[in-house]
Length: 330
Image (cartoon, rainbow, N blue to C red):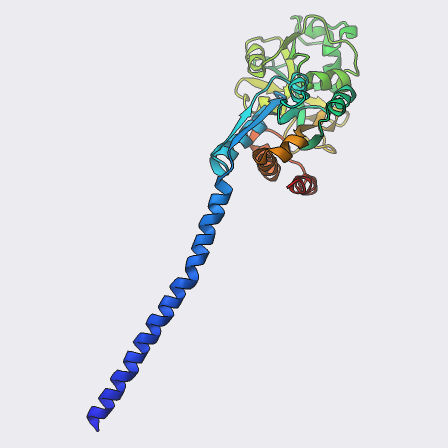
């Protein structure tokens, strides 16, 4: 009887072993397709290749260059995203070319009517994508301790030819009698056009203003000239705080320092705030998967990239609207 019980126990244990093995085999088989599917998905994502060509605004350049590097590092290592900075206007000339223009043109202003007409004539569907907010920042030399706070009118008059201000003491009694040296980006840049059209209201810039193509050159010139005062996008100031001082501008309610908090379309620095853009050639995005993929990636990640590169980010609603449009091109 005892032997019978032992035999029965052994039979039960053997059955359990067989059952467990069977279950183990079943589990292995069920997880294998999932692993294969995951691998296939990775291969599907990794297969994009080719190039994405971007030119245009020097102001938007740091933001787009940052996004391009992130994209090539974290999303599509076989895609080459080439970002240049010839300036908004010069960039539109490269963008508005039949068949072989650039894929994107970064712009620190809206497309002009004549540029939009050219796009229509060439059959180019140029989609405006608003990417961030920028503040026109007035910068002075670190040794300038007298003009750290200026009114909006004082800033305008310093750069306005008709005002006749030549010495710092002409701006305000008590300022030094030294000559004012004005600096800014040249006519290729949307920043120059915005400053001329919106801030100076299309009145002539003071004669002798040192206008430069490259923003790093402007930073260097102002940093070496005690009597210098210049203007450019907030991002270039933020990355050179050790070399320059940003002027606090009084728009009527006290001096306001440009910052990510004040550079808003309804913020305290609003009079000197502007949106910045990239324009996408929709036809090329439909023809080249890597161009559309980059556009979607850029818009999905532009809010985080903005803060990293000296821009105030857009709202979620604005981003979602752009992403929805781009997803619809697939």
